[in-house]
Amino acid sequence: MAGAGASGVDWLRRERAGQQSGKRKQPAEGSRGSLQRFNMAAGAETFSLREVLVAFTACVSEQREVRVDPYLAGWKGLVRFLNCLGTIFSFISKDAVTKIEIIENYRNSDQREKYLTVQSMVEYELANGLVDLQQRSKHPNSGCRTFLRLHRALHWLQMFLEGLRTGEDNSKTSVICSETYNASLANYHPWIIRKAAGVAFCALPTRNTFLETMNVGTAEEAVAMLGDALPYICEVYKITEELYAQHKLLDLP
Ligand SMILES: CCCCCCCC/C=C\CCCCCCCC(=O)N[C@@H](COP(=O)(O)O)[C@H](O)/C=C/CCCCCCCCCCCCC
Picture (cartoon, rainbow, N blue to C red):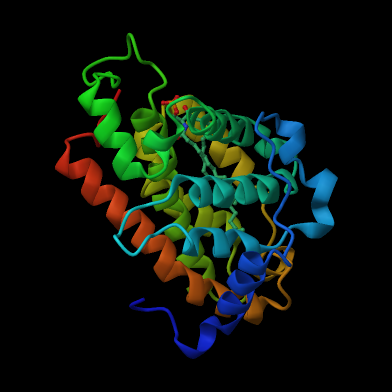
């Protein structure tokens, strides 16, 4: 994996070996969503950035396909983290949970195999006319459209995590979050959402406190882990962006 420090990903190999052997307990995954189930209060002590990042590192197959299940597992972990930051972020969590559940429902449907990867989802939905290409109508919550919203948020996430990783000790998470949001996701949101997000960002702690909230040790250890995992998140984003661009799906309504 280009960019991932070869020596630095030992934690990653241990985590994935643990998962494969069944020794590492995956976060509880239900088939039906609710904000409460994602709530950190239920498992606040079990959240770990490590498990989120391991999920994203498991997304890309040898054939450069993006697997949907680990992608959703990564987002579920992020939502759990978000929920422990306070109810001011609940309007964001609710939307993320809704989108995760839409795609989960496709993965629990009779067509579940068509939604195994982003590539198979795009192929299936386009071949069967299941995507509203010009305006939301017969298929307002297609997998392609819903996944695109999470994909756009992943762009913000990778910018935000990079900003945290490279920021000064005394930098403000709220500033990093605002700047990366305004440079990415904000371009797809109406004024009211942008204003609400801006207010929520003010509730964020300092960078080092935020890094320590990730529950992987010191701020320095969290920064090192972000450096190991970010190349994988960037690869997931890059593959999805290329796929959507190839099929002219980047502006789905
Ligand atoms: C552990 C690593 C540390 C990073 C922690 C980050 C935790 C982030 C968790 C979830 C991220 C937010 C996911 C948001 C998905 C938003 C999808 C979207 O754009 N939805 C809009 C469009 O959907 P449609 O209306 O077209 O169906 C929707 O209209 C808006 C929803 C609500 C607000 C979206 C604001 C997004 C702010 C992103 C920054 C989150 C900051 C978290 C604090 C660190």
